[in-house]
Image (cartoon, rainbow, N blue to C red; front, side, top):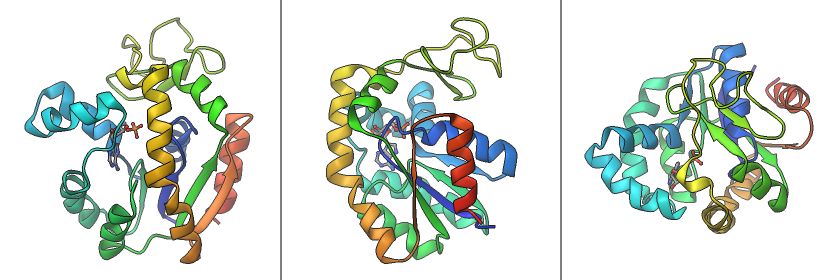
Length: 208
Ligand code: AMP
């Protein structure tokens, strides 16, 4: 099985949901740069203070900040990892490529209007980072995380205006990574619409 995995795709494509399933079921270490940054913001660390202004605007945190944050972590990962939200630029992909040889970049493909609908209806757990959706992935108890019992919240960057900006930022900076990994023979694309388990099965196939 392929064990050095990147999840690519626009915000709202289901990277977080699928990363959670893959991590739980295959025992892969999951690294989400978004989760790391949100934790830094919550703890009000120097990194969090720097990152917050970009995140609130739906912009990318500068490459040197992200690469600095990830470098040591990636170096320590060894043979198995699941990257969610990194790399997001060609510069980040080059930095990653210097440390490890990625087995597969999974591109989860979803149309823009569907992404806007999903993100504005998304609710997240501040504690364990699980994600829910008001229409199609509701928690068992309204407003409460199934996994850890915490109160769910709407991320500041999940409002419609910021979501549209994040999609533009994605198109300009991250979309070119699809070609980047295709050229290197490492790309697998799956359709990210429909049943969560069906999408999971398609991803599992791409890991064989
Ligand atoms: P996410 O949770 O992956 O949607 O990330 C939330 C926000 O964190 C993004 O909109 C960016 O502002 C920032 N961020 C996360 N990962 C990266 C990255 N690899 N490069 C730059 N900014 C990032």
